Length: 226
Image (cartoon, rainbow, N blue to C red; front, side, top):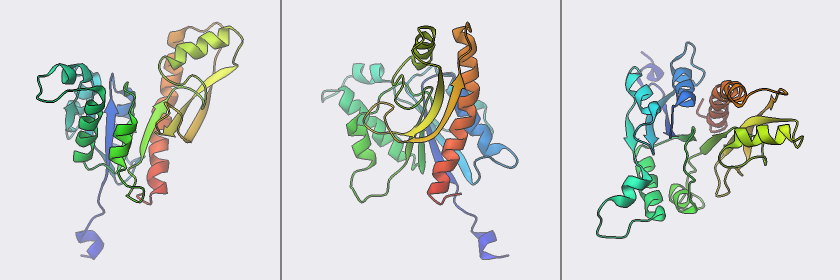
């Protein structure tokens, strides 16, 4: 037996933050389990949700093996009795501590409906020369267009007014500015005249399922992890 056989490579620990159904999370899970895996030498080590009823948590329980999960809801956190004041900032401190406790190699925001504050980001990267844990986000819009919530209906509305010719999806690095980080991967999506919002959303979701895996793979490759 060779030394490489007795010491298999350490799996990349991917930690995913979600808020809802988790279809993009499922794409990531499938990408680590496929043959061959689209994300080799990697696994979804932990999933954190800020909503207790997020179906993505059920996806984790149904996975084989089940994926560990945690729930940290802002409203619940703020309402709990505490000897010290609880604020949006202390919530982000708690969230950062929870994320760090999972020992992530890569953090992916997959429909996580919570804006990460400068406090959170500073705790993930405490020193200028400290190792950077990459944090990437999936956003259903082109860079610089329709940042923030409700990007798809806003794009469709702008299309119907003749203000844009189409929309897109991107995976970008997370910075303090909402959806303002460096794009890692961008895909344009055509908007068809007269189409319903539900149809556009369905087409965009299909692109999301591809690009979130491809974006994660690209970052891990940049890190020399795959």
